[in-house]
Image 1: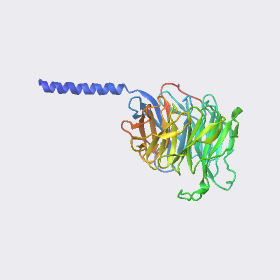
Image 2: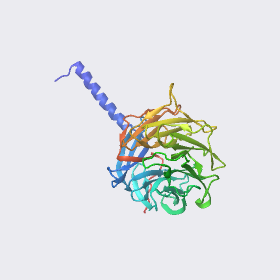
Image 3: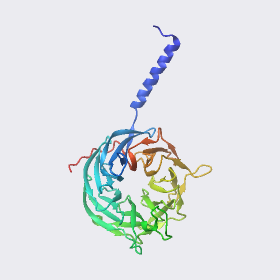
Length: 404
């Protein structure tokens, strides 16, 4: 049967669309892998999982890149990666372990070794030299533990274990929340708050300052010594912290006061409050990240289900909220964003792990303005209750394999 002219045109158009779609799909370019720690199902006994997603270079959209792998325990709460992106570490609260994974060029993870912590792990960080892993732990007492790392990322012995105590608060429960290392490896900082200042429901019961940053200078062989005037006041309930790439500034989120607190780094490790601060955020900020260029800051606001952004005044480090013509900009996420990361390959995409939404929210970052726009098809489904998110660039590191 012959086709008439209109039918022929329709057929040609359909074939063209199919071919174009096929070519577009074939031209997807992955620039990063996003790893999210979550649970396989509901309940505290459910096994932990790490989910892997590929980031499309053009749209920032995520797609599953590999089957989920076991986190090596239950209740994974935090992850960290080495600066060469060969190794990933995950902290599991359910069995008090920190597990080391090798990262392949295709995003595949392989479990290599692990350590068991004496207390419940809360957060962890790796220095830029990839020589030390810092783990904070404790629910009734707070401890910073420094582990040595071999050249292939294997976790070695605990070099230092330091109880986190505050003069004048010896009878109080100090709860650690975050740890970060200056990019030059010279200092480590830990955020913590005073659980004794809260009712069981989390409301503040005391006007005393219950939030601190502990500072430690890193000496020869990894030796840690408290910096001058440490611990430093840090609002009411500090939850996360991040340094800028130039080692000059530290930024801390205060969950209880809904503020961002800025510090300047003096004499290589001592912290001083930034003038004109603290700076208002969305409600209950829980995560903070500075972009690779050191000119923008982004926060995940847990109660608002939003991300807020700031520009950094380079001479002083002072953050200024990104605004439109009428108000500060807040970008909507799925429910309860608890972890935020910026892609390291190009610094063009921002992602949050949403604990109650069981999802990831994605945003495209305009490098000229800092303004965010939602990525295609966001949010992206994950396992149950995701708690942590990290990102590894694609294509610039080799497969890491170690015999435990």
